[in-house]
Amino acid sequence: DIQMTQSPSTLSASVGDRVTITCRASQSISSWLAWYQQKPGKAPKLLIYEASSLESGVPSRFSGSGSGTEFTLTISSLQPDDFATYYCQQYNSYWTFGQGTKVEIK
Amino acid sequence: EVQLVESGGGLVQPGGSLRLSCAASGFTFSSYWMSWVRQAPGKGLEWVANIKQDGSEKYYVDSVKGRFTISRDNAKNSLYLQMNSLRAEDTAVYYCARAVGSWGYYFDYWGQGTLVSVSS
Image (tube, rainbow over all chains, first blue to last red; front, side, top):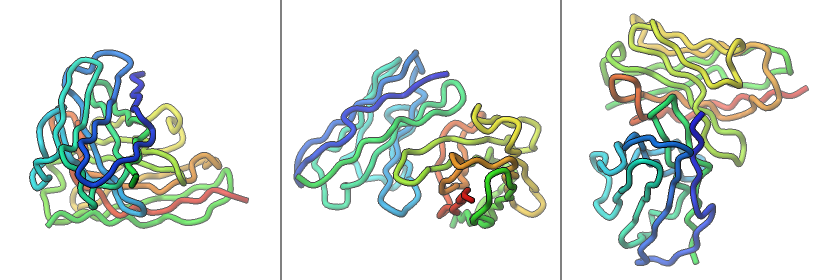
């Protein structure tokens, strides 16, 4: 089974900060990775697929990069609406989520 | 507008059964893989099961194999999850999600979730 490990688990940041979240796979998953945003009490929302493709309607301040085993989600300038928990998900072999990264207000 | 609406959650005793339903609208249901994803209270997301467009392929996370069955009725635009031999660790919000791609790669639309609580 492919394990997904995100870091950090919690991130404290301020509005306007550049934020980077890392996701590592236990084996190569090529570019078969998606990122989601989830707010409390709400369903997850797809942000990025195939490691770097921006889902329609998602602000351009979100970007994804990486391939193989190491991936990043970057928010170029953190906005108030971006305080949430973010999950990566691999779909190279079955489907596995990372444990999540909570972005909180500093 | 794509809509996914789950129902069927509730409180059940350990060892009991429950059937979740997901009513889909706003897209051609029979053209998509569909999935169930769950989230235990205060925990992260866990993929549970996927089903191919025609129901010919089904996949499960190891922890539910032999206990849960995913199915669909394309005529009714509905997805189901039959859950048997429920355990306390199955307690979670269960989300229905539409899966994109030839193998149901990632999840672009999600329902609001239905809560399943397993407790005596």
